[in-house]
Amino acid sequence: MVPFNPLDWFRSRGLQARCRHALSGKPSLEDAAREVTSALGSNEADLALVFISSHFASDLTRLLPLLQQRLNAKHWLGCLGGGVVGTTTSGEAHELERTPALSISLLNLPGAELSSFSLDSSQLPDLDGAAKNWQDWVGVNPAQSRSMLLLLDPGCDAINDLVSGLDYAYPGIAKVGGIAVPHNADHGSLLYGNQVVGGAVGLSIGGTWSLDPVVAQGCRPIGPVFAIEQAQRNVLLELSDGDRRASPVACLQRVLADLSAEDRELVQHSLFLGVEREELIADAMLAGLNQGGVSADRPERAFLVRNLIGVDPRNGAVAVADRVRAGQNVQFQLREAQASRVEARQLLQTRRDQSSDAAPLMGVLFACLGRGNGLFGSPDGDVTIAREVFPQLPITGSFCNGEIGPLGGATHLHGYTACWGLLRCDPPEAEAAKRS
Image (cartoon, rainbow, N blue to C red):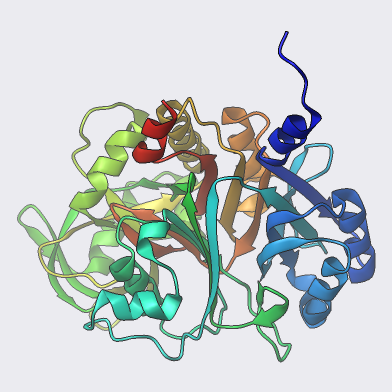
């Protein structure tokens, strides 16, 4: 028998990865803070993730002092959401929408290299300058980062430039997050350290830990694929289908004529445009998706789903929330519950199968305000899908005003999506070799 050394036991206990979660629906900020802090205990954590509903917007500056009186963590990060996602102390995961709610997760991550940062979005470095200027501005060494959690204030300046700049400075590093919801109070929507701030905040995760991203767009295509014949920036002027050319509105009218009555009803509030991106095909292959089916074959096409933001009745032009150009292909898309379920489940299953030896410690979910009960018709839609794939997965997160996640090797700002970050202990090859 191996001799028992109590010091070894305490050391091993101290090096175990751990996540503690608490979720409160108390209508009073003090009562909610008291409930979660009592449940979590005072043991030190490496990271505290805090998500709070917009019902507490005017009291947001009082939250961190209430929590930090009793909770101890090296890094604090969080935001105000239209609803929160959280896990109770008994292990139940829930989405709390349109109600006061507070979700907290405390994580101990031995082997992790964590670095939190707060960014003034009014002073972005030049996108045409050196990548090192961005790296110095963020304060994170790319060699020590494998993933980033990114939270943006709704008043953040130049969001697309910020996301592009972070991709420029930190290529190949997955970035997952969301935009907090707006409010009328005279302070920001983000929690960082012991402050409430605006701009952007984030957490770099490195060492033996990483966030495995999953982006579920939740749409299915309708009608044919059209080629863009004429476009100006984000405005579609003319589309073609074979030898037939017409305005985007005329093309949409053709599509609508062939839809069922149920789909025509969906069009009134759930119509989007898919912009073909060749670089997304690899993602679709990995997900095993081919036009909604399960297949590992190379799909013919893959689309980045974008919002439709306006129509010009004079010439039938359509504005889309992305830059487009002649020569690209597009296809109209419908967002609906069943397509969202199928896609999200398949994407999560693919991640599970690819990393069967490294089950996630936790899932962080950034879901659009348009998902949840409004999309699925019942509570806990996205967390239920995740629990079907990862039955005991603790989940935390927020309902956002826009979601951030990678597709096709680039980070995009999304709408109506579910962007997941699956937190795994996944040593890089050099670390794994040392252990073998």
